[in-house]
Length: 270
Image (cartoon, one colour):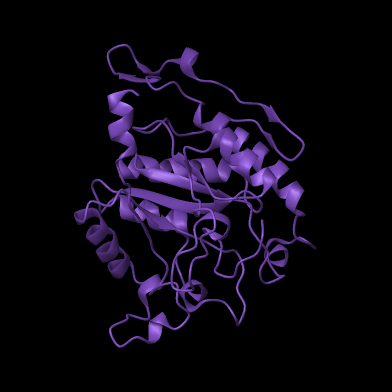
């Protein structure tokens, strides 16, 4: 076996999953806990810098698009993940910043622009955890003007188009398209601008995107679904996969990667 590959496989990468005061439902009641953790930017900065100083590879932020009275306290009152990693990108130097965002209740252009903005501000350290959103509260669709939540298979069909269109938008500009040539009066090279004109079953996106590639071109893609459609989505697009070891059932105080990663706390098959 190639020695480089052997050494690389021995490398362990650590991510810090940040959710309020912790996964445990009562973690906010601990005598040393800071109950406002999920809505305090100063506290989030402290956590991110602590993980960075400890040489963690990345921090990970989950999300949910609806809450009810039974929701984990850590998700009842918290920042939008894309907004938070955008801000954290300006106050950290090395650590990766992975934010969860749903393909079911957003539009590719809006998301592509916001995520690439965050990637620019961080110097190319942002990742997107692609989810299709589980409807744990039976109220998600109502938050977005819809009558019912997307059926599982349909969510993943939509997700594939969403990622296709988003990546197409991120490819709007060649890496060296912007010349900033004052002498010749050439702000950019028109030959290095690509129109998208994406037409799918769920999305029609004209493009191009009004922001150039970041230092790493575009955000890293992560994915966590373990159903058949979820695995296909991850195999097609993901640079990183969240997964639990076979036969391993995390306890209630352990972050659930794999089928539960990024969308609330209560387990439900995807």
